[in-house]
Amino acid sequence: MSAPQSVQQPDPRLADSVFLKAARGEPVPHTPVWYMRQAGRSLPEYLRVREGIGMLESCMDADLVTEITLQPVRRYGVDAAVFFSDIVLPLKAVGVDLDIKPGIGPVVANPVRTLADVAAIPDLTPEHVPFITEAVRRLAGELGGTPLLGFAGAPFTVASYLVEGGPSKEHARTKAMMFGAPDVWAALMEKIAGIAAAFLEVQVRAGASAVQLFDSWAGALTPADYAAHVQPHSARVLAAIGELGVPRIHFGVGTSNLLGLMGEAGADIVGVDWRTPLADAIGRVGGRGVQGNLDPTLVFAPTEVLLARAAEVIEAGRAAPGHIFNLGHGVIPSTDPGQLERLTEFVQTYALD
Ligand code: CP3
Image (cartoon, rainbow, N blue to C red):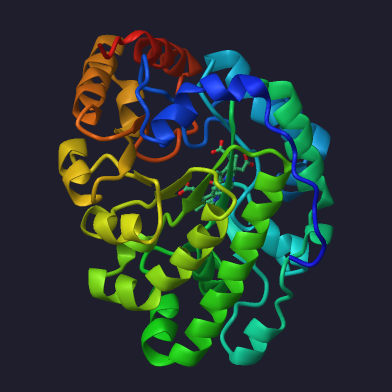
């Protein structure tokens, strides 16, 4: 990091945070709960403030970021706020030509293919993201005893957007680079790892109490390829943040057979999607805590079915040193916020003793 930054003093009420206690493996009165993509298209108040404003533009406006991050905390009373941003925002901030297209996702104008393409991407410094520092500081003040979770995209998942040029199911070009051009691959992963670590450090220094590293698409890899070509780079990001002393969550989708390696990469809590029974996941993460893992489509079932399945997840989570309740992936845009209100209340009033 180029310039020393002041560190925001944490709100004393954060000492009682159920989310932070669970993340550290300390006893809690109830399982803490938040939702990936809790801010966003399932909330009418989100759609109202976003009207006529592009996604990346919104992420660079400290007023909007603050408001959108607070919306689900107000409505659901969740145990953590997740910072409103996107995994490609730091790339945009350093000057990569990209956009987030509605209904599509991140689209990169000039996909990365060569060492020269990698070298052309600048490293991230706090001066690239003053609006992030500003929004996090304000949020830390407004949230009081509710922790703010910062996040970044992990090197593999971000590389997939940069190499493919947009969303991809197979990640074929990305993996072709990994298998066929290991020097370009290593340079790209190092570049993104540095950007992710710097982006997380900005958030933590401005007042984020914990971080999540999203390796959403790592499930496309075999354990051997993950271990050889991806894990060392994610580990570098997580080690850099570990030095700042905040809990780290490491999440991916379809990562049943990678959970042990993702824990070893340096996570305190491993995020689990809904496909892996939580009890199995707990056995695989090597004594670490877990986050998850209710099927996000259960919100479309009758409330009693939703809550019965939530109870099973809470009960399974008791075997872990720490469990943070979440869906197995992001909130689906057509989700009825009323269902998440009822789910949140259910998890927070489900007594653990
Ligand atoms: O509430 C939160 O979880 C915080 C905000 C957040 C967003 N993106 C906002 C967003 C977070 C944590 C992300 C992370 C992110 N972005 C991931 C990792 C998480 C995951 O879902 O696995 C990924 C892969 C991306 C890339 C990305 N950005 C995708 C695939 C999309 C969806 C495209 C679409 O419209 O279907 C986006 C856009 C995006 N990021 C939206 C939001 C609220 C929707 C844009 C809008 O509302 O116009």
